[in-house]
Image (cartoon, rainbow, N blue to C red; front, side):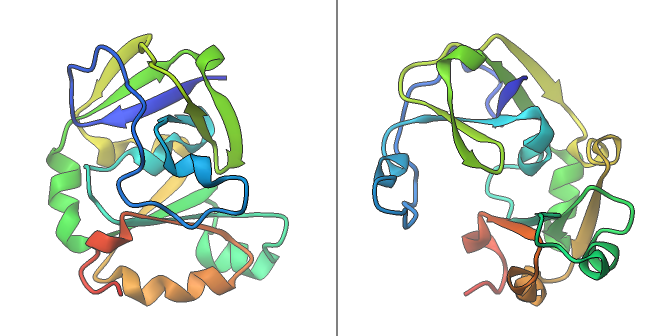
Length: 175
């Protein structure tokens, strides 16, 4: 297994734990996930972070609750789909992002969409620059979809799909 952290900063020598910028409501006993941590994503879910910093997006994939009709309607032959607003497409095409490979032994699985956390300082193993993140989705069997508004996708949360909304506070008309 491989773990990664994505950043627009090409010069990170070590990652220091820090609290999340906007705390999430956590189940009892998991409030510590808002505290100082270093976050990483596994290779199967790395497409979730192939975006410029602050780019709002919605990502979907199947779960055991997904009906065949929902899979066909929303995913077709793709294993996942990533939705972004049209106003972010040019930046996605032009932005260089940096994928830092992280030492697995420093992290613990939180059991949520490929996310892992470390409670202490982490020195990355390697950095890879990705100059056209928009071209990284197809090789991962992820369909990148550009929409005028992410708000039009709110009904996804009532399906059997896994739905992750990232940085939605930056979406044009998100409430």
